[in-house]
Length: 421
Image (cartoon, rainbow, N blue to C red; front, top):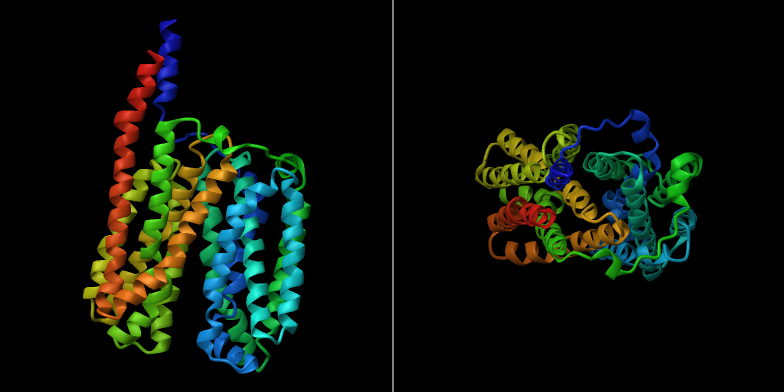
């Protein structure tokens, strides 16, 4: 009996570090789910270099066209919040295939549309479908045979910055060759068709087929059953919303800041953003290789400190090479935050992981949509502070992560051990 109790206590005190090995095939079988995340930037960032040409076609200013970068994320957030409700009536595979089919039709329609408001509406609806599939694909990942969820979620989210690097090249290449920006949507439709075919051919077989045919009817009461774990989860939601402001400073605002405050030309400023995304990808691959040996929250604390230090150096730097170096460090600092926050938060409970992940997505996108207004308001008074705000928000997130580490180590584990005794 004593041995059994000791085994139970060890099981309750076991860390998130895992020694179980997953095969390369296990990861390859999730490629269609990875590509669902790749489609997010491909779908709406592909037109980012073509705003001037689009403005001419729609007889409006490029700034009006840029509103799409607000509307599309709002559509994504709405899709993420409502995605789990479809699982109560439909199979996951039916939801995903239906969304892909509608996305293809929307992109074909965007090729022909001539009215700006119709363009906005179709884009919002496209974002909504992308948001639904974002959650559905994440649920597939969380339910798959891969044991190391932190690693596979990190790899999954890595496909977003890869898409962000490729996306602007689509419309810019077309325009450079005197081809209408509208063909961008045909390219996106073709990419969507390829992803849909891969999903149908890979994700509807074997164990993946069982996951794809799942219908979930889980209420919120069935998910949030433990107050102690609920505290950790809602802290995770706040961390997701707060830290993301720092990432948006670099992803959206840094090129403009470099032109206004550091005197960079447009090409040099854009190069800084390319470096940032490259090191986001590199950092996520590094994190995915060590996350099985180091606790995720320790990684989060470490890279948070790196992001804070790199931001301070970024603002105080004046030489171009050193500025690029600090941007690369910032990319490493912010690289694994989102995937590790998502994976640790979504796996706190064994049931209702679709609900858990969708709320984390929504929390992060709340930060994404509010960040431009925060940055713009501060930039009107002080350019340097508009970047240093990243350091402040990341610092708050780091403190909250530290609170979770202490709470889990000294309170939650002790409470579990006392309960067993």
